[in-house]
Amino acid sequence: MKRYHPLILFDLSGKVALITGSSRGLGYVMARGLGHAGAKIVLNGRNPETMNKAVENLREEGIYSMGYCFDVTKKDEVRVAIEEIEGELGKIDILINNAGIQKRAPFIDIDEVQWQEVLNINLKGAFLTSQQVARGMTVRKSGKIINICSLMSEVGRATIVPYTVAKGGLKMLTRAMAVELGKYNIQVNGIGPGYFVTEMTKNLKEDPRFDEWIKQRTPAGRWGDPEELVGTAIFLASSASDFINGQIIYVDGGVLASL
Ligand code: NAP
Ligand code: GCO
Image (cartoon, rainbow, N blue to C red):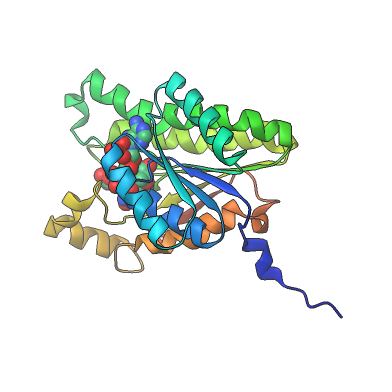
């Protein structure tokens, strides 16, 4: 009798995955994980040097990868990038909208430029990139889109209002896209990471009081390791999640479960 191999559901062989904002940080770690699960990887960022080094690192690990610099907030840059990537690698099967920035300031001091930059990168960027990639997915009636949300998709913290608004919007963009694209066999879900040390948060980790607060606030009693996002990313990028749509999976050590 043929043995049943359920782990095959997580195999990404033959798939093409674009991860925005993956020249470093969480995006790079998730891209590396999808690469080792078999996908061809397209990295992205605005800084060519950082991105090219990241591509080199993946290739040294035997992952088929390329890099494409584009700014997710620029519609024409996104359009050209997706056309050229799909021209070179074939259709994009998996999109992770990961590019994001953080700007911290007291609410009453936030200027309009800061507000707009955070909303553009963290929310509009996901909209523009998803729209461009989904066009091909709707024709092929197949695709996976994963939006990298945040604890701030659910709760607020002082001094990060624009980011919180953007991530709250990203949660609802995830659900709205899931509803509209589900009929094309496109699954749109989100990952909500807790606190992980990257360029975005290293100054928080280096603040002993904030560091201690996070450890107290997180039932796991620690910051997350970016590698701990890889399993959820592979799951949502693979056939193992074909009947999951519009969900946000929080990888947060229990923060949102606790008062
Ligand atoms: P990071 O280390 O600062 O990396 C951000 C990435 O986004 C970089 O590759 C950056 O490259 C790229 N990027 C920024 N603006 C871009 C743009 N306009 N177009 C294309 N790429 C752009 O941050 P991270 O901590 O890894 O965060 C990654 C994602 O996870 C973000 O969406 C963040 O909100 C989310 N997140 C992070 C945490 C955490 O604890 N670290 C928790 C929850 C959610 P360039 O600067 O070269 O463009
Ligand atoms: C902050 C951090 C957080 C994390 C993340 C948590 O200033 O509190 O930047 O917003 O980046 O989003 O999920």
